[in-house]
Length: 165
Image (cartoon, one colour):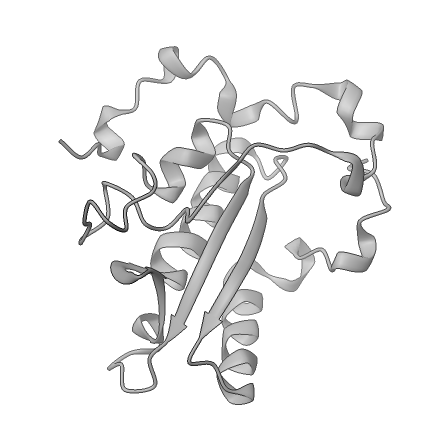
């Protein structure tokens, strides 16, 4: 049976949603030296609108993965130029579409997670594949990420030698 946000019992999680900010020793490590828990095909899970035994990789939604301590989300994105809304144009996939999209199920949930944790937890979005992308689609996705998360929250790869402090 799929899990929902109502299944979350904060006492069971024992502050896993804030483990980075509650571990001061790692604040001085370079980002590139951190070994962070991540999930494979993070947006294809049992809580998604559509799942199949073949393509489902996770038990929990991306938000529920974050509050359980995951800090790297592996994302495989398919661009659908015929979608009715911008939100639907960037679908999460693993052989099939999961019914999840980047805006609602990743970016909005990262913002929700940061509101819950005071914005002190590092979250890495690892965009692993881009199916059916054009240069215009890539520019549209970049703009969507910046407008939803805010440019101030994004860390370019060349900052990986920096620490969390």
